[in-house]
Image (cartoon, rainbow, N blue to C red; front, top):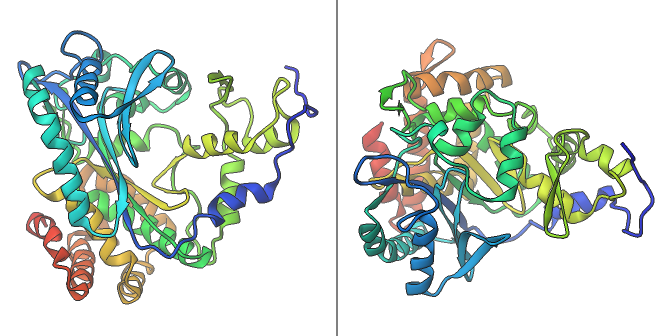
Length: 410
C-alpha cells in the first residue's frame, strides 16, 4: 500500500479538529429532533421497498411534487428531500427520517411534524403504506429488506462487524435529540449528564420487543442491536470522568478506524485499515486528510451521545402516541436549567462507569425493570422525569404537558 504524505492539499492541523466543536458554542437554547419511522405495507405488514410503482422512492417524488421539496441525490438515486432547514431522508432499510430545524419550544417541533405528516397522509393512503412508530420492524427481518441504493451504505454494511449490525442498519428506527451548549465547560457537563442518563432514557422509551413476528424477550431489541454493531465506534465516547474536554473527544475520534473517504463525489473504502490519526500523519494512497474528511469521519462515529456543533443524544426507540414529544421535552427540562442539572448530578453521579455501562445491557433486556445496585431503575426514571417536569413547569410555557404520556407510561 502506497502512503503519500506530500500532496498539493493543505496539511490538516489538530487545532482545526478542535475548532469544529469550539465553533458550536452558542447562546441559544434550542432543541433539535430526528424522528425515524419504518414504512410498512398495509396489506401484509412487510417493510415497504425502495423501488416499484408504489415504493418509497416514488413516495418521495410525490411529496416533492405536492409540497415543493428539493431532491437529495446519491449518484442518480433519490435518497431524501430538503426544504430550507428541514430534511426527509432515508436510512439503510428505507426508514423515513424527519430531521427538523432546532426550535426553542417543543410545541413548534410538534407543529412541524404534524405539518409534514399532513402532506404525507394522502400519499401514504394512495400507496397503502403506514409509518410505524416502533423501534424495530415487527415482521420483516434484514434478510428480506433490500439495502437502500446509497453508495456509503454498501460500504458501511460491508465494514460494520458486529453480529447485529445488519439488524441495526435495516430494521431499526429511533429518535435523536439535539441540545445546544454555550461553552466547552457547559458542553462537557451536559455531555457527561446525557451519557449517564442514556441507559435510563433507553429504558423509558423501550419499544422494540417484537421482531420477526415473535416476542424476542427484550424490551428494546434495537438497543441490543446497537450493542452488537461495532464496539470501536459505538457505546460511550469517553470514560465519563469529571474534567473531560473537547480534546478527550477529539483524541477518541482520532484513534477510531476509518470506514471511507469521499473523493470526486465518490466513496473510497478504507475498511478500517487506518485510524484518522494515521491518515493525518501519513495520508492514504496519495490522499491527504482534509477538514471534510474529519467531518465525515465524525459523522461515521456512533456513540450513545455524539458531539457535533451541538450535543446529539441518540439511543431512544421510536415511539408514538405523544411519547415522541416526551423525548425532547425530557432533555429540555434538564439541560437548560442549572438547578435541574445539579439535581440530576446528585441523583446519578454516585454510580460508577462500570455500573452505567452494565446497565446499557440490562435495559435492553428488562427496560425499566432492569436493576442497578440490585434495585430496579423504575423509581430513578420517575425521579428524572419529575425533575424535568418541574423545570418545564417553572418556565411557564406549559411544556410540562409533553411529559405526561411518559409519566403515564412509568
